[in-house]
Image (cartoon, rainbow, N blue to C red):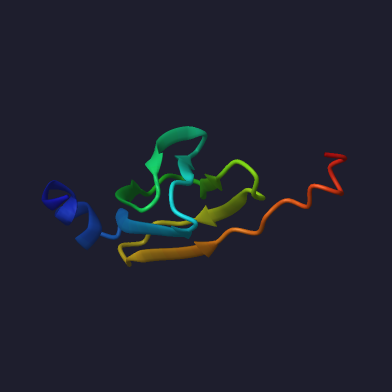
Length: 89
């Protein structure tokens, strides 16, 4: 992440930390899978908001619109279980 330090200082990127309960959620940025939580990554600024999606089977997806600005982006998410009765299962 050291190589991104100049971009972070210029407010063109942010360090994003994703922690979820339960852990193991798929973390995707703009539709591209980055890995599983817990996860730390550098998010580069673009002309529009970045779309961060957290997904875990059996739980509702969580989505964020983010604008990297040089500040850290700490995300701590507690997933809500899907209601099996509502889905007909």
